Image 1 (cartoon, protein in one colour):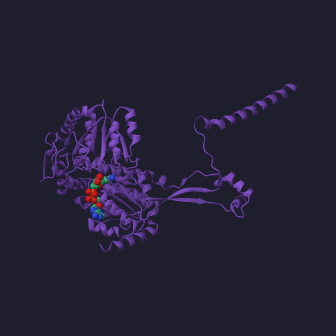
Image 2 (image 1 turned 90 degrees about the horizontal axis):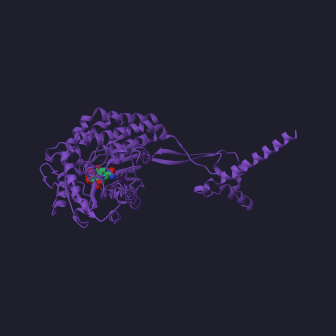
Image 3 (image 1 turned 90 degrees about the vertical axis):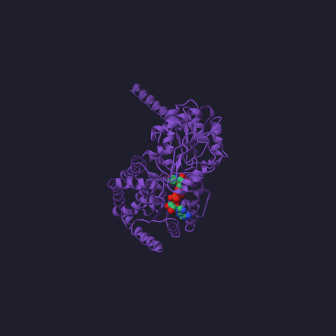
Length: 498
Ligand code: NAD
C-alpha cells in the first residue's frame, strides 16, 4: 500500500513523456482490449459465474459485447475525436484560428462496483485511454474472481507503464484516495461517493460519480400488459435485480394492477421456469450482507409472486408486492435485488408528484401509448435518463450519455462521452501579428471614436426567430429584384433606342 505514491509518481512521469498522447499508442491499447475480451471470453464467463451466478448469455449482452463495441467505436472514431474542433467566430476574430483542443487530464483513478464488474472497469478505461490518459483501476473486492481476472490479464494485454490494476477493499481504496489524481471516476453507492469527493477536494481533482437510487416505472392504462410485463421483468430480474438502472418500483392505476401481476407471473415463469432456483439463467445475491438486507426489506410483506429464499445459495426468487405504500420500508432505500413493489396511483400526474417529491433517479421508465402522458412525464421530471416503453436498454446505446443527476450521480460516460469526460477542452486562439491598426482600437487612451468602432465590431445581435428570420433575405431579394428589373428595363430601352 505504501508504494501507491511511488507508483503514481512513476505513472505521471510516463504521462509527461507524452507516450499516451500519440494516436498510435491509444489505438494499439484499444485494439488490445478487444483481443483481451475475445481471447478470454470463457475465463470472463467463469469468473462472473463464480461471483454472481451470471449466465453466459447475460455476460455476453451486458458485459463483453458492450465493452467490445465501445472499444471498436473508439477505434473507429479516434482520429475524429482527437481533431481540434473549429468554433464560431465573431467579427473581432475573423482572421484568427479558434478551436477546442481535447487534451488528456493525466493519471486517472477508476473505482468499480461489483454488480457489472467487467463493464464498470473496462468502459471508463476505454474512454480514458482513447483520451490519452494513464489509468489506475480498482475493481470491487466484492466480485473477487472477476477482480483477479482483471489483475492477471490486463497486464498481459495493455501497457504496464500506463495502466495498472490495484486489488483490495476499503483500506487499499482509502490509501489510493490519499494520492493526487487528475480525474477520478467512481461507481457505487452515494455514501462512499461522499468519501471519494471529499478526498478529491484536497487536490481539486474532478470527479465523475456513477451512483444509483430508486428508478421508477409508470405504467399507463390501455397498453399491452404482456409486452410491458416482459420488458419490466427482464430489466428488474437480470443479475437478480442487482443493476443500477433496474426498475426499482412500479406505479400504475389500481384497475390494471391485477392484470399486470398475472402478466408479470407469466413473464417470470417464461424466463426462469416455475422452478426459478434451478434455472441457470437466474443470478444470486452477491453476499450474505446484501442477502440479509433484502430479507429485512421483505419482513412483514405479503408477496403475490415469489418471496421464497435460500440463504445457503443466497437465492431470492423474483418477488412482487402489491398495494405498497410510499411510507413502507421498501420505499425508503434502493432495493438492488429481485423485489418489485407496486404502488397504485390515480393517474400519471400523481406519479409525477411522487417522482418529484423524491431524489432524482438514475433512470425513469414510462410505458404508455399516449403521447401527452409521455411528454408530460418527460418535461415535468428530472432523471439521469428517460426511457419510454422499455427498461435498462438505453445503457446499450453508446451515443447516449450514461449518468445520473443530483443524488444519482454527476458526470456521464459511454462512447464519446467517456472520451470527453476524461479530456480537458482546451480553448485555443491563434492570432497573427498583423491588423495592428484595427487591434489598436482596444488600447488606451480611450476615445469616443474608438469606443464607437469597438461597439460596432464587438456587438452581438439577437437573432430573429420564426418567419422574421427570413426578413433580411426578403429585403435583399427585393433589392436585387429591383436592381435587375431596373438594369433590365434600362437595357431594353437602350436596345429599343438603338
Ligand atoms: P462496492 O461495494 O463494490 O463499492 C464500490 C467501490 O467502492 C469498490 O471498489 C469498493 O472497494 C469501494 N469502497 C467501498 N467502501 C469504501 C470506503 N469506505 N472508502 C473507499 N472506497 C470504498 O459497490 P456498492 O457501493 O455496493 O455498489 C452498489 C451501488 O452502486 C448501488 O447504489 C448501485 O445503484 C450503484 N451502481 C451504479 C452504477 C452506475 O453506473 N450509475 C453502476 C453500478 C452500481
